[in-house]
Amino acid sequence: MQIEIWTSGNAKRRKYKMKYNTQGLLRDWQHNKPAMQELARHAASKTAQKPTITAILTATNAERLLGCKVQKIGKQKLATPPRQAIALLPSLVEAMGDNVASLHQLLSAYYSNVVQREDYVAALKLGLTNMVAIDFLTDRHHKTTPASQRKLFQVMGRDDIYRNDKRILSDVARAVSLALFNRVSGKQLTTVAGTGLYLTRDIIRDCMQRPTEATDEQLSNALVLMRIAGYIHLAQNNELTDAGKKLVIVHDKQGKEIANHRVYVVSDFGKANWQMVQKNFALNLNIRLGHTVLGQLLGRDVVSAYFPDLSGGVTRPVIGFMLSRACDSADNTPIMTLAVARDTTQSIADVSPSAAAKYVDQCLVLKSVQATKMSIKEARENGYNLDEWQINSPAEKLIVPTNTDALMMCIERLKRANIKGVKVHQLLND
Image 1 (cartoon, helix red, strand yellow):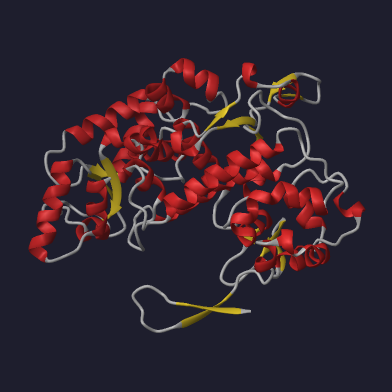
Image 2 (cartoon, rainbow, N blue to C red):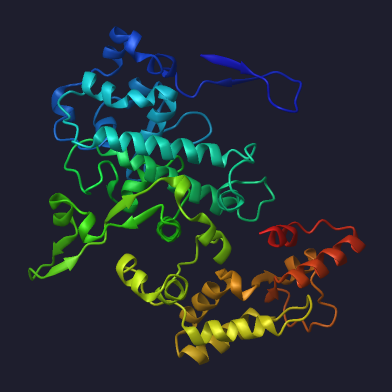
């Protein structure tokens, strides 16, 4: 089946294949029950003891239900409509459109042996509310959302220096909302109905639109930013039901109790404090924030209660060194080479070269440091003054200042040379 659309800014009519051949039926399944019965046809044994929608779709004929090809890529079965591979649950949500609000009814009608948990409808309501908010925010035509949210989630074009990080952060945030209602069966985990979520990287990937495009490290770091903002938080003991309390303690081979930091409370996406993230950190999902940095921002007691799973990270003396060197920079010349920063950090913290490199990266994520790293070529293209800088190697990386004065000097230098300088303009607006 094909549909014709008009693309903005293009007077030529183009044709695209519909992603899901069954989406017309799924968006009005209530009035197409015989056809829906055929789409959802399966042996009851296939869905017995399947707690999630992902597990149900994996065990049954997802190709027939969705009307698109399904392939196994790595560990996952993914829907592969034109141009991308999508996890099965977000594919179903997309195919159903606004009618996804009736998902609990569809499950009752055609997968009746899958018993819905007590707070499933509440979870579906919160999950869809957050999903709609995220979808609205990530559409760059919408400018009415807070600037702090747009700067974290809204890709401004191909030149956006945070493009990949924003796409992953948005996908993970949306996956959290879908994960709320992916788990159909089981017990209510938190005292507030619909908010409890047992969270792992695999559970997130089952709910992502682009599960193959993010590394495990990027997923984990995205979740840390969401915890800082308060979109999700580690469930505290007084927030857990008896079922939830059973999940937060596991036993090792010797029978010793170990805390399992996996049960979270999901809040309203729009009410999270995204400004705290945007004002304090440059968006880089390849860098893990440590216990020390969060302690300075949130306080030790908060970090101990809500981030017990995070380890130390960069130390205060290293942060102090990077801050002092950045503050000494009075113009738009480089602060130092990346090699000098790493060697000095290794000496201050008495750590390995690889740990020193991570410490420097963690410092550069802090907006208070007001510096970033660039190649020599990139620094020149963005207006930094290298006229008197001794270049030892063309491959050398530099630490350059990102304070307002330095960036304005770069922009003036670029104007005189009639060069665009994409990165410095975005750093200034960030």
